[in-house]
Length: 123
Image 1 (cartoon, helix red, strand yellow):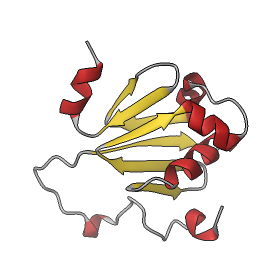
Image 2 (image 1 turned 180 degrees about the vertical axis):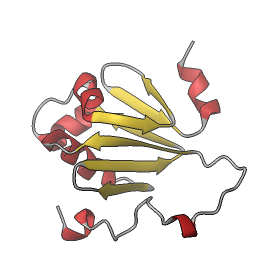
Image 3 (image 1 turned 90 degrees about the vertical axis):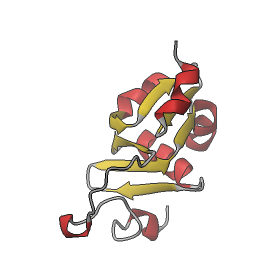
Image 4 (image 1 turned 45 degrees about the horizontal axis):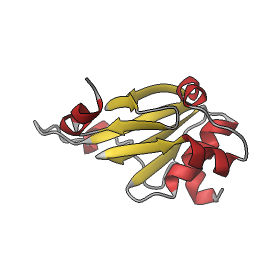
């Protein structure tokens, strides 16, 4: 992992209150906060390779943020990690999320920023 990836001064989602503008719009952002662990670091490093994904490292947590949707494929993460990653292990490492989280199957967890798009996956 590069030093820049761990440097919180790089691009991240955190802003000072003076820099925040409140608007009555929908952002379509989604993200997950994970407890810092070997698994969470592998997930963050892997997801950080994808376009429009911002990974922010903090002392005890890792934030993964995106626009539209974030697709977590357990088989791809397993290959990157070098051992099996299950949806259950993913959920254990996730301390919180925003957007709508849908577990499609045993291999796929999707976070949706656009709630309308999520409706095709639920009954």
